[in-house]
Amino acid sequence: MTHAILIDNIGELTTNDPAIGAGIGGRLSDAAVVIDGDRIAWVGPAAEAPAADERVDAVGRAVLPGWVDSHTHMVFAGDRTAEFEARMAGEGYAAGGINVTVNATRAASDAELGANLGRLVGEALRDGTTTMETKTGYGLTVEDEVRSARVAASQVDAVTFLGAHLVPAGSDPAEYLDLVTGPMLAAVAPLVSAVDVFCETGAFDGAATERILTAATAAGLATRVHGNQLGPGPGTQLAVAHGALSVDHLGFLDDADVEALAGSWANSARGTVATVLPACDLSTRMPLAPAKRLLEAGAVVAIASNCNPGTSYTSSMGFCVATAVLQMGLSIQEAVRAATLGGAVALGMHEDGWIDPRGEEQGRVGVIAPGARADVQLLDAPSATHLAYRPGMRLTHGVWKAGVRAV
Ligand code: NIG
Image (cartoon, rainbow, N blue to C red; front, side):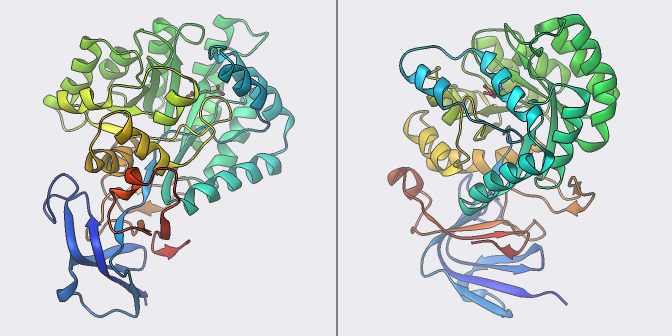
């Protein structure tokens, strides 16, 4: 027997389903939602809502899907405050700081890594994030990448292998590439659903990126790319050519990159999602990714936090949405959709039946529609517009993940 929860008297409901409501947000006013077990059972006008075991009166507040954070690096130990202070004093971001976190992560126990990850996942959930991806990439030995993946798999919805984050200090680049595409990939593969590569000058070049993506596909895993973060480069084009689920960062795109991302969806149901990371762009003082231009060209855009100790030490999707509206020029509906359904598409979770790291089959996320996983956030505001209208305010009033109330 499941327990049905009716959330009614919703002032503004964002469903992300244009078949249910108006605009790209699929919005309804004076609405209600029924959760039954871990799924959404019913969505519609409050006046037509069926009875349920429990009633939550939203008192005119806004309801939207839980955030889907499709890009984080949260299995780590240590802190990089000094690097951040130096950056704010004018030093540029160079990926070398990754080695500082690698050293701290290798020295930490599994329990310490798990506790730190749990702290960050908890913070995010309290701010409305109900679906969370995280990456390995601060271990960079077979043993440390495997234990990072294992720690992650116990706490998040999707784990990505990022052995190709950086050639670790003291390693030979060619030998490390052999390791990442060979024994390290083989050891981590059973614990992850995707492989990522940092395609950038100073990390992995185009040829190495191609080799890593090809090895990932041969291992039966999906792919992602960190591309065009620190300068122009081949990351975006390689991601699209390879059919990667997403390419992330995108501060330095040329017209051909934008066209490739948009074109990837033109003749196919499955293109490459353009994931923008507004908090990272601010924290590294790099150019903001051209999210509006990407949307106008026809690309599918996701917004993610990139929570990590180096370039973006926040998991606040509300902050990212506000920044996307205030500084990247997205409308509220575009930004909310990118931070929910966009992330779901980037993770391949926008359709029912995806399998979480514990082997459980899950309903689709990023929408509030019958059959979807019951991932819902209730704002302490009458509309989602307040996320950008009142930047910096904590507006989370209620959160349900898979039907279980977390806040
Ligand atoms: O996505 N770009 C590479 N990886 C992370 C940064 C990692 C770090 O500096 O610790 C990112 O920004």
